[in-house]
Image 1 (cartoon, rainbow, N blue to C red):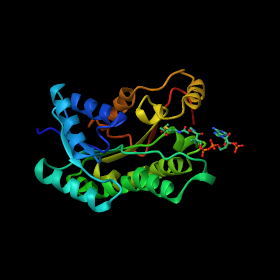
Image 2 (cartoon, rainbow, N blue to C red):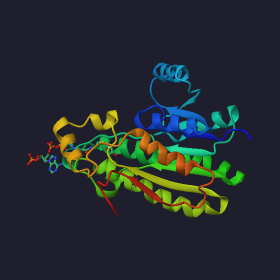
Image 3 (cartoon, rainbow, N blue to C red):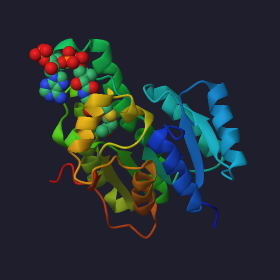
Length: 246
Ligand code: CAA
């Protein structure tokens, strides 16, 4: 049987890089999505190849519906139908609500939430037609608990789980599962960009006493992607070192 095809948005970034590798290690054909400069993407691609990871890569501006459609159309015509979509791309633009600009609000909602609809819309009909699919949405602990300075990000990440549950209902009869993963604070550039003293205070609130490693999140993705895990749908799996329990 041909390898199943997995698309990971933001597949070259902190958590995305680890997800791409983990899925590759599990025998999937992995397309790492990017929106960065082409040269930087090509450089990442060749570095990965040297390390033994023969990824495919594909460009999409995930804030743009048409760009997402074009990306998926290219993958379908070049490689085949998408079996697994990991909606991982995301950004932060942190400010207290009273200081947040409309641009910061709009950009985070588009990048972190609308993108999930755009990408999913591009793959879902083909998944329905083939009666198989895995949609895995990367949310955040801050969509569950809220976070000072993140009304945009917390709203987008909370919205993801609403999307997950609604879509799970719509496609269950087509053997497509849809799930959310809500990581806590992970050791990536995004978290390392938080002011040192604030980050230290956050780490002090984590019962495990440390940040998560990206690979710890990636392992949950491969668990949900597994063909055998066909009865978990509409779920939200928290991976946050005990920082928030519900
Ligand atoms: N709780 C309560 N009050 C706070 C506060 C907090 N955490 N942080 C700041 N304040 C207070 C300030 O003391 C200040 O009070 P005064 O007006 O009385 O002086 C007021 O709130 C405004 O503070 P700032 O001027 O510093 O606000 P700002 O708009 O510049 O934003 C911030 C500050 C950048 C949001 C900063 O608080 C911060 O970086 N917080 C951490 C945000 C965070 O956790 N981001 C996560 C990024 S990683 C990620 O998102 C990945 C993931 O999924 C987990």
